[in-house]
Length: 214
Image 1 (spheres, helix red, strand yellow):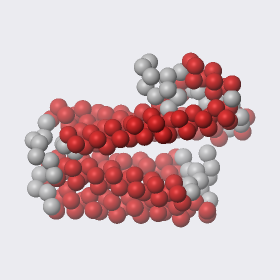
Image 2 (cartoon, one colour):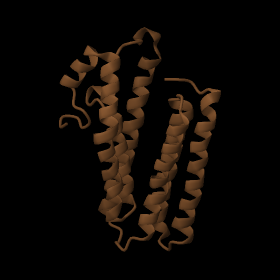
Image 3 (cartoon, rainbow, N blue to C red):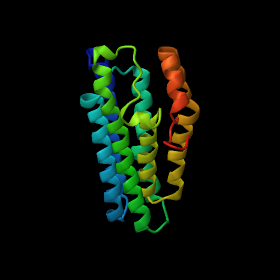
Image 4 (cartoon, rainbow, N blue to C red):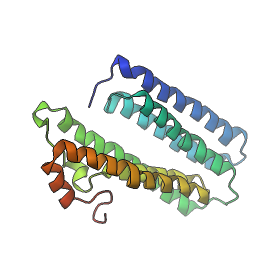
């Protein structure tokens, strides 16, 4: 991991500013234009938790370099979460279902923890100079090569259920497809080129995304 430097501070500030603007708009949508403040509060709290977690990851827990292209793409992606789910909630004609909301919160919290904890467990290994050139296969990554991506899919699915609109499920589905056909193949190619036989053995003995399944 890379420390925060002057060349990436502006990019990270762009992402942070975008998050704040999105949350302000989300607040307006959920509490000013919508009359069901009870379920609105649940979604808004989940969005706040997401913003705090992602900001802490970016600036404190896992600081690394971010290019302008990545900063812009991340800002746009966050807009889908912070604005897409509130818009889908306020346009929904569905009555809230307590069971669905509970499952949504379980997936949201579980996915958030899975993504964050998997990354934090890997950080000491990556930071230790002794491990330079070594592939990390411990912690939660012993269960799946891209276990952190699974965490992303789960917390976004949780937000979709909390937003109380069946069409919200298209967002986590889209994210899942992006991981399957985009991020994972590119990441695998990168790891293969960097670690060679280490990664070859790792992928032969470890599931790709979902532990014990695939």
